[in-house]
Image (cartoon, rainbow, N blue to C red):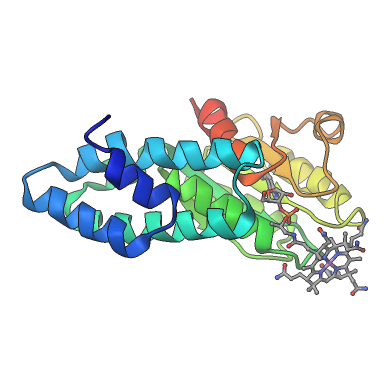
Amino acid sequence: MSEWAPLQQALISGNEEELCRLVRQALDQGTSAKDILNQALTPAMDVVGERMENEDMFIPEVLMAAKAMSAAVEILKPFLTADELNAAGKVVIGTVKGDLHDIGKNLVAMMMESAGFEVKDLGVDVAPEAFVAAARDNGAQLVCLSALLTTTMPMMQETIAALEAEGLRHKVKVMVGGAPVTQDFAASIHADGYAPDAGSAAKLAKTLVQ
Ligand code: B1M
């Protein structure tokens, strides 16, 4: 059994109190924050993502794991450099204009943060120009668009067009998702990627940003 197993089990089961206790204990024993993050927490969050994809874990359990991860990262933060914390890359995420659904988008943002991305969450009802400005100002490598309504899906295409018009399209990858969105739709609007759930979104983000 790996030395990290108790810590990883606490994270996967969303046991925030136990996870924080184990993280503090590991730090007290001289383990580096970087090792705790990279060797224990991040691989455990990958397991959460895979279980979510396979429907072995459900939304409330994933939210508890993500909340435990955030609490653990807060403990580690003072010991980590900015590069170690946000090593995976910079992401801008939001729900497209006209759409107020944010539960799934928040979950995707949490999973991306847990996977080591620096995430700028623009919220809901985000206009194409706001995505463009945020991508430019934050030096994002990835723009993530969420839509839950069939009537707001075309706004994804408009956002991609706005990135193109501003000359940013070749600098950023675009990922789309949300209940009505499909791989075919993503391909039809020339998005770089589509993910059906938050676990696979975080995994795909790593591939897209490489
Ligand atoms: Co709305 N709503 N809603 N709603 N709502 C749906 C989406 C609907 C399917 C319900 C129905 O009729 N059966 C329907 C859409 C029909 C359609 O377009 N075909 C609908 C409608 C019609 C509406 C209103 C128009 C109702 C009205 O006012 N007449 C209105 C629109 C408001 C607006 O947006 N302008 C409306 C309003 C609302 C509430 C405000 C009441 C509330 C939203 C609260 C909130 O988000 N803070 C709400 C809710 C809760 C829902 C349902 C019930 C649940 C959505 C949800 O949160 N799911 C929904 C029905 C349903 O889905 N069963 C419905 C849980 C969430 C974890 O899943 O968001 O799919 P989801 O996210 C998943 C994946 O899709 C994926 O990962 C997530 C986690 O695994 N994912 C991504 C999401 N974004 C991603 C981005 C990615 C990758 C993956 O990459 C970038």
